[in-house]
Length: 554
Image 1 (cartoon, rainbow, N blue to C red):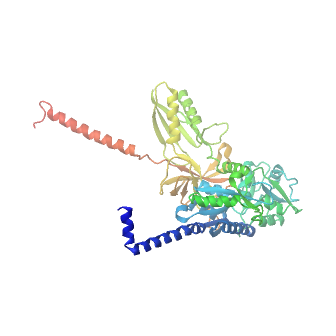
Image 2 (image 1 turned 180 degrees about the horizontal axis):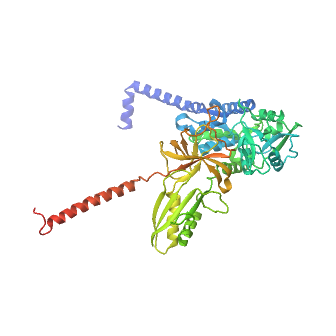
Image 3 (image 1 turned 30 degrees about the vertical axis):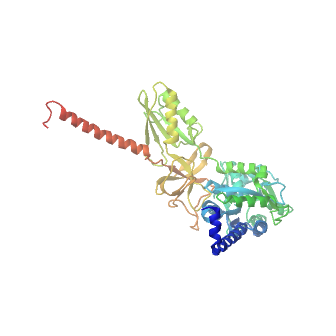
């Protein structure tokens, strides 16, 4: 229809012109309403409720972002463990954006378990000049520790017959537990109920979480009153008690970032940009409550980024070493053929896994036993056993190029990395669900039954331990980040509600991740082709018999 015809048509229909004007007005109202709709974005705000001051600082942050950008908030105050669970389970596409103020260890624990988060800001405290902080162990003056020196503290702990009582607010507290636990474990200090003695290899303390969800300041009060010997705090809490003559604060050599402001990664990009812009525009005393002066853009805080990266490495660590003993087909301590032994040693060294060579002059025990024998000149049979777990041996038939040791090393290395079962510790920070942090390439579906053992360590460095009888642990769920097990078979504390798992304890639980039988498409295709070829061979043989002169009559 030409424009002239269209104008004539509309001119002949006055109702059409009114409709067009109404449509334009509706579009204009919709366009004008869009900024208002965007300005009323609702965010869930989660905060780790440490104390009343921190809760008020969170409220000031929400008020600032609402007045500046029009955000609306649905606040949630959570303890450390519940905050980790929320961050891991949050689905931004289904539940909307999540903004959370968390401690560094809560963030790292959630990250290890699969939370998808972006750090947008770091807290600035009026009590410390930087965006990082130190942890301190606080003791009573006159208790026996005369100087604020970590070595003096360790000597005092060793000289005490009765283990010192260390109180903490939560396992996921960075300064209250995480960093002190790392310090203690490096120094050979563990939780234990027995007394300390001069000939003892390790030093025992009693690590306890007082009931009632006490904050750091309350724990310092327990130390001052003599109801506990030790507690862990950060610089801000230390500054509150700096003039107390009854207390001595001992700094630990591990810097950590201040509290973090994190946003769910699936949130709308515009939400992130508005939150970041609001943080960048924040004035020096915008929050000004308790230990939070203001918030700073995380990307503009290189010291905090480095401290978080260092803490991440300290926290995650890696699987403990798994010594492999290698023997020949005669059994006992008889070594295999020298060429096979050298190939096996090189494979273990080059694989880059947790497997290491057993050294009888260093290791007290081995975890895996290899038996190697030649099948013929270009094939080797490797039998791999796991004595602590009651598993049937794995047997691998490995072919290689004749007179080519590099080829044999490659086959053995591939076997280590891609075909052997793996041994992993249960993550002792989670006392609700037995969890194994995943770092293997194979999945374990729900319902998979795995052997597990209780291990009492004398010295993890040289694999000196006592192992209990194996029991069955069943996989409840798994993803790229962790395998979660059913709690059956794992011990519980006296309250019956939590598992008795202690990161500072000398007892741990180890699980054999049994590699599932391969059932890939290529495996199924190969099996089908073999069957088809067998049928074709049978048909061809029958056809040949029928066609042969003098064969059966047709």
